[in-house]
Image 1 (cartoon, helix red, strand yellow):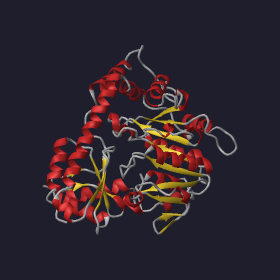
Image 2 (tube, rainbow, N blue to C red):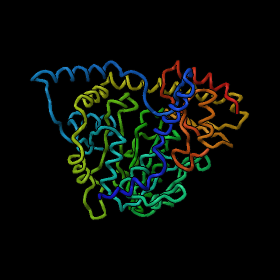
Image 3 (cartoon, one colour):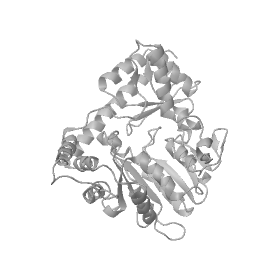
Length: 407
């Protein structure tokens, strides 16, 4: 008989978001009259904007004509889109042939695992987006789980006590360091000085940074970096992954990109971009041509304005939720809110509560779904992540209910 991949056997309990969905469904089934509102998973809710959706629609219609039909595209992505991404986001920092178009950041992160193999050591922020850890486990880059920790993964606590900046000295030499800014779930956006510490450490210890910038367009504080390549030396030690999912509402359309500098080398001197090109041409057939034409439109002047407006819409929800969580019922319970307005998420500590317990409490009393912080790592215990992705009316109603929560 074929043996099971031990990576699956080593995985801990089910992936966080399906578990949230399962509990929500069970509650809904036992409370059929309940109108449940989600402030949980980071799934966009607002319609695609006119300029972007028209571009995709027009291109899709053109596929029904001999002149407009296209089959396979370049595995690396449309050259025009690669050029536009480089010009829009990486002027003076990366060239278009270092940009690879994909079907989303999560998919790129999964493929990154195949690039480095199972013998690499991994370091992750704690709390962190679960796929960094689970993806490492699935390819056996992590050993068996012991007391909630995997043997070959270094966990870097990011908490209010250390201002969400981890102690990099805990990272082993020659590691992959997964780093997300603005962070999911904490929402913290790192400063240039903080990212310089990360880059200098990586260069000095032979590490490669996998920099997740999927929420970069939410940054509104002047001076905060939106790309790791704004930091001197990053081209020698970092890969950046980004996405149209949140800024353009492409969570279902699926379109993202990675940037792999030509100056980034393996220990034997081989350019990493050479192997990444092989991964993308062997394990991937290219992003949808329709989605890529939506991406091109998103980077037009009209599209950029539309994306900014939709992000501002979600950031307005952040303000509404933040104001509610400052209410007397939360203050009296010592609830602590961590939100800088540079992310669609609010990271909120409920002292004295386990994350799943307060998740259940909010669901039962308010009929509002959130995300338990412990699902992102041990340092997330007692925290809840509130998502701002939702219609204003639904968010306002959820906040009205939350204002009545007893703690």
